[in-house]
Amino acid sequence: MIYVVATIELVAGKREEFLALQRSLLPLVRAEAGCIEYVPTVDVALSDPPKTPLRADTIIMQEKWETLAHLKAHAVAPHMNDFRVKSKVLVIHTKVEVFEPVK
Image (cartoon, rainbow, N blue to C red; front, side, top):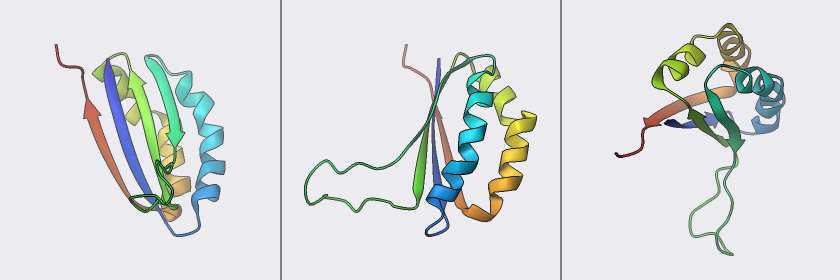
């Protein structure tokens, strides 16, 4: 299994606009071969007040894929390329981290 954590830093105040675009993408990705989980997440305060500031303009994608080959196919899927074009003006920076379980 392959795990992905993609941190997407957005233009200030554009999180809801980004999520609206992403909602149409989610079923397409989840239908891809090898997709186990594909979930947008946001920060949650663990304490009150939070010990670290919440990132109001950040989305963290939590992904699970059966294999690295499935993830690579996802990265070049036409709907992903289309989504990148549509969301480009909303995104400042994306950091993608890929992991596998220790055996």
